[in-house]
Image (cartoon, rainbow, N blue to C red; front, side, top):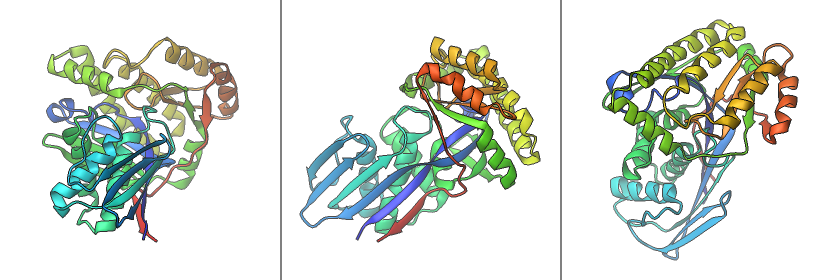
Length: 340
């Protein structure tokens, strides 16, 4: 038998960073995100030779272990190892022999939530195989605990929930890891137009988001009012984006994105750099009404809202930077698992 899963990556449209502690614990956070047709995939095949095999096909990494209840965390496919360790510890209480194969449609550090989505996909494959009693909230929270607590990787809470639930969601975050996911019923005509006008551009750079996120958290702890006020504005931006999408006021999307981008840059050092600023200025001159970096900042993907017939002129203007405009569609489904 093969036990498979896939979970969608996401675009953070508004409120980015307000899901990160301690801001979300103190002030409450709000995010609006939408999943897209890029995925993290995981497949598990049980073995009968007392071996554990981890294979990341996109990273071309392969590791084999003798049967054990706990795999070492050493910087090599730690997400894979972390999920296995937690599943054994919390549910099975004995070692398992299997081959785990994964693939992600975007590179690590791209800003689309790749790491958290991969954890959700791997956990989903284990849940399919072992019939683990996990609802959507349970699975998303467990994925968060594995990545943020067990593995100590800095980051927010939105990615695990976006990958698990899928669709367009307005998410609220508060103390004690409380998360409320509010699915939004956006008309298809609005989503189709949004996907057409919202250019997803890969800068051909990646970054370690942990440094930026740690700086952001330190700013909150140190009561940096400039940074905290920027996060307040981003939380307001999530509400603005929700209203615009529900009402179909798409012409305001670019302005809302630009409002968020101007505030996001105030949250922490490293969110932008001269290349990102040059790209942003170029697309604005080519007709984009607004945009932002995807994820914590520093590199990876950017998105730009291109009203009317400005999409092609924006993509043409981006060619000088050597990146890639990537096609996608919005998706309505989150984590999907099956057996064959």
